[in-house]
Length: 178
Image (cartoon, rainbow, N blue to C red; front, side, top):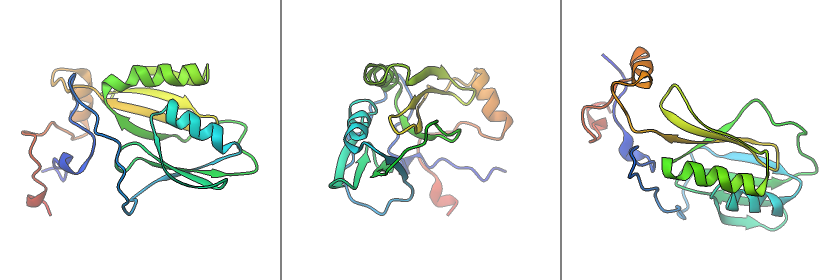
């Protein structure tokens, strides 16, 4: 028996598919379950890249100190003023989800703003298409989008090998597990 269950209804990420439509940007204020804080020595340039390249919007700011950016619900980034930034991107990355139709436009927008900042798109063994972007702050950001699930694919076999199988239906059954 598996401890996993379908709980997709609690996520803003739509089910993968060729017609998946991204949700609208989420402007509500909530207790953030997780967020990323990124230091920058040029707050204005960083904000511009994150908005025009990565598709975030400014939720609010404290002038010359911090800008809270967001895309969808639970995709929060705080850009904070700092005297210096790392010279090299870290090995660690921050990933955020989108839909397949956003992958190529995001990669192109980031390349226009910062040539040589983009690696990909590339397909992963866990059934996503990813683009890695090095931001002006030298943060390593991965934009990831689930591909439609093909039960006959190698990716499906990879997931099944670790105990993850597709849900029987698209309705959440979390109440049976709570």
